[in-house]
Length: 418
Image (tube, rainbow, N blue to C red):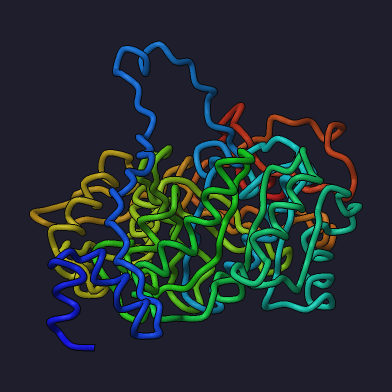
């Protein structure tokens, strides 16, 4: 088939050319499809609201598991290893399930609680729980687990399903985060950290419960407690509330730093009772530090037996002279320390001083022997108890709650029988 023949048959018409090729060429050729117009998909616009509408809304107040410390939402609780985080976490669950007290002093509302102890065994949990209960019955609303699927392997669905079956649940504690977080993948560390906690935060917000995740602090220290949390800022950015617990190794007292979207930033002093496995609230950390430092100053002055300067005391304590001078001025105002010369201070024995050595008291409690409290003979006045002997039960502990009279009688009254 010649080109002249094709031209004569088609007269340069493309459609006719294709028909000729199909007729004489033995193949089927289809014309190119006409380009279709691109379909425009539906665009979803996020729902918005005006400022006027927002101000007209009435939102319920946040639910508090521990008033002032632990609100609903997601809480990240971090501390160094072996400091007592798990003891504190378990005690919060016990207090919530029993409707008792948190941190030894704060009344809490009763509700179901779940403690997911991924680093413990049932035997260890039973031992710790027995110490905390101290002979009391275990609360029925406390649920425990030592195994749980990772969040990306069904663990998030397990938590949601468990919450759906426990409408009275108020608190879930996961100890620790590493046991549930997905393994590191191809995503960035910040993105992965944020996504891990965002999943738990969404569940906490949806069910209006408090979910606490126990985590670790990084090695080293920082002026900003949030920077001490191990991992990226994706963890602290996703959490509603952040706790950090720190203390000097070997000491019973610690400082709980707390901050969040619904709570004010604060530092609280806590003390650990090894006999019961419980953390107890002591008060504001700064006030506690000052009280502790004041006690050290008084002990130094007592042991010295002669007036000392703030500089000399500061050298013993390893503090600055200015900080010691400030504490001494407070002690002078209280009447526990007296200025006796230029820059010289001495300890003053007073009947109301909590640091006084003018009296020596023996330990007395429900577990101690029946021994009277003895007050050594000295120039200090003797304090008289308000409670009559008939009001003190045999075998119970008692303490001086207030003073009704100050007597100056001699040593004949140096023994008080309780």
